[in-house]
Image (cartoon, rainbow, N blue to C red):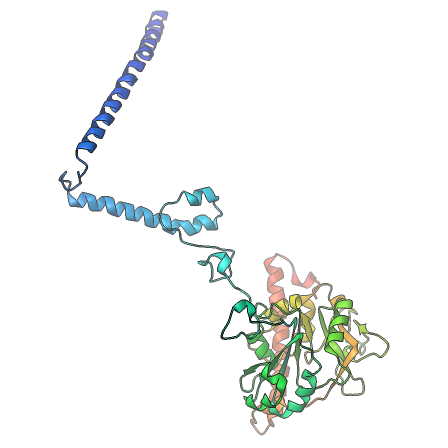
Length: 406
């Protein structure tokens, strides 16, 4: 392109730039005049409507449907906006009704405002009158449960009297006989739950959810055949706190039948956390049954430990066999947080009362069928734990054979 052409093109561009402001000014003037005219029309005709303008109804419906559709799309999108943590200014700018969606709420309660969610409860009885804030003269700090039958009334009466007013008493009745306990004054203040021929671990899984017993610092889950002549519950709690035990049990009288050396009471200590067992039973001195171990007959759990243990209990394995070997998974380090309190001890009377609630089959006594199921459940529980751990490590891309777990 020669210089004359360049000059001509450049001159044309400059000429266009010079004329542009005049065109813009005309636009502004037109807008202003139109606005003034519209205002005057509006003042003179305040009742002007779409009907008087003879606009087709289908057009109006289309506009309305468009608005409704847009509002619905906004409402549908709102939960995802909140879930993806959009900032609050974006949420405030959304028009239309606000639908609550709080992902941090417990599952199923996401549609509630967080401040109204009550995810914990208790066993404190309430009055039917007066102010709720004045219902409770005191709030027990600990919970003790016994799974009981009518034949052990005297034994349970003696046991309950070892627990002060700091304890809520909860009785699980496996024989459906509840009113007979009214002869005891304390029974009128206790909580009674009745279901025929069920074990304490069946009850525990269904009635001792961690959010239900959240107010209690320690939870005693005891059998009915324990002699408590040498036991004081308040002193037991003091020793558990002193020695930092999250899972514990009282020592067992050494002159009665014992299954494990770990649970045998020692006369020269307040608490012990390890023991020696038969040769070959404990390849690791920090693992059950030589340490990190208590039995399932009279365990005591801290609130935090129970939150884990409750999830460990299998819904269909009701006898709890094998559970004592797995309790170590719920505290860290287990060989320091699990122990036996020697200074507060009990006698295991070995009364097979629940065993007699079984059913005779194929010429076997009721207790024999119960015992067979106990052993079967132990095997099933061990297999489930092993399978679950293997699946977990495999998902992480690790070889389970090379993992040392609790």
